[in-house]
Length: 117
Image (cartoon, rainbow, N blue to C red; front, top):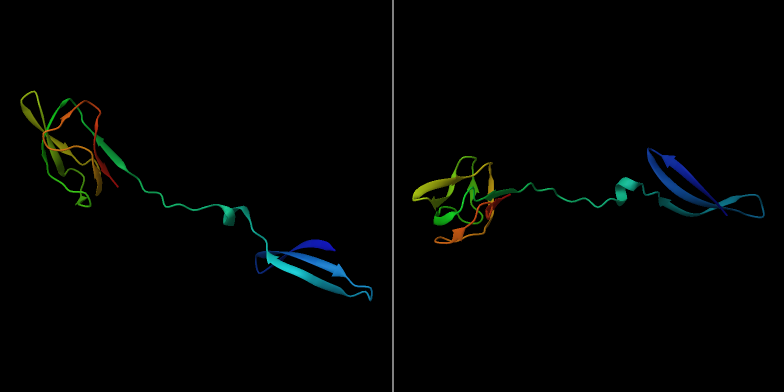
């Protein structure tokens, strides 16, 4: 039995051919040949934007909810630091996928506040 790769209309097939005693050939098996691209698992790529505290302080107000759509520049929450209220803004358009702080919570510089997807 011999194996061949035959391409028909741009599709490659692996074919096993057996030669019979009367000189004829019989195809035993035909399968589309898999290429590397068809074996690669595809995954949806979702970009996430993580918004962190720019300075230590307390979360005064959370103005968004999980699932809410926001635009770049929208105020997400108010961070009180050094007796001043600082707006935490969305840096990109997206949907709020998680809120990692609560009103009244103390946060440190760099602490993750919100994730947008």
